[in-house]
Structures are given as C-alpha cells and as structure tokens.
Amino acid sequence: MDKKVLLSGFDPFGGEQINPALEAVKRLNCKKTSNVKLVAYEIPTVFAKSIQHVISAIEKEQPDVVICIGQAGGRTQITPERIAINVDDARIPDNEQQQPIDEPIVQSGPAAYFSTLPIKKMVEAMRAAGVPAAVSNTAGTFVCNHLFYGLMHYLQSYSPHIRGGFIHIPYLPEQTLNSGAPSLCLDHIVKGLEIAAITAANAEEDIKVIGGELH
Image 1: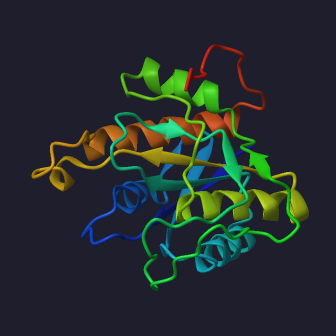
Image 2 (image 1 turned 90 degrees about the horizontal axis):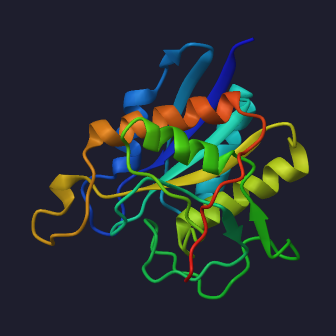
C-alpha cells in the first residue's frame, strides 16, 4: 500500500532572502517514488503559527509520516533530530517579531519528546548514497524546536499512528559567499531528504548503531 509523507519547510528568517528548507521541499512536492508520495507545505517562521500550519496540513493530508525541515546555519551535514525540548528561548525574533525567553511551549507538557522516525536508519541510507548526514541531539530553542515539540505533542495526543520528527539542513552555498560558513548544494539536500523520507515511510523500526556524541 502506498505511503504518504508530509514535508514542511520554513520561509526565510533572520534577514536571509532564502531558506534551503523551503527550496528543498518545493522540489519534492507531489513527487512519487516507488510506494511513497511526498507532499510539501511552506510554514511561517513564527512561534505558534508554525504549529497551527502543520496541524492543518496533517488534518488535510492524513499522512503516514510527517517530517518538518529547517535551516541550521553552520552545520555541515543533514541532521535528523533525536529530541525536542519544552522551552522557547529565542536568540533572535521570529518573523512576527516575537522573542519568547525561557517559556514552555506547552504548559504542563512533558520536558521532551523523542522523534518517532528511524533517525539512524535515515542517516545510514543518506550516507550510503553519498550524502553527508548525522544524528543531532539538539534542535535548538528557536522556532525549529518549537515546531518539532508542537508536532510531537499533537501526534502523541491526537494521532499516535502517525510518525513524526524534524531534520535540520545546512546553508546553501549562495548564503555563505561572504562568511565562509559550511554549506551543501541544493541537489544534495533534495537527494538526502528524499532518501530520508522514503526510509522513514518504509522502516517501522530503527537500527542500533553508534550515533551519539561526546559533547
């Protein structure tokens, strides 16, 4: 039976003119590969609204898997996130000039949610295809973590049969011309995300391999 994966990508933020997450998911929208159909939505980089947009997309699409995608400037690899924490602590304002500091995402919610995606299997599949990838153990405390936590809280509460999680991706090369920061070309990002989505749709369980960090 065919599987559906819902992808979300944030609009540009923090003064950037482009967001690789949005550019990548636009390329993958309505793509059908083997038994997996991908659908993609643009999400505002705004606290609360980002969660509302993803929930609306879930209720419309009724996917099997949800993968939210965001930019992590400075990273060198595509990084599926392991955990979302219940705190907003914004170093910069979001796109509506909101800047919560040390505030819970969900009052009385659990301290954290783990991804229900096969994150290590996704990493292994991307690496096998020549795409740099690694597990990440922090999604930050900005809108990416906010959305990741909100997604998992919603799925746990209302749709536990749907698996979900978050992936961070590096800058695009055109974003780093003046900074020298690490980047990854869009073709590689799109390829990696497609592999990750197909793997997530077809793998019910993760693999147990080394993927941790010393610090």
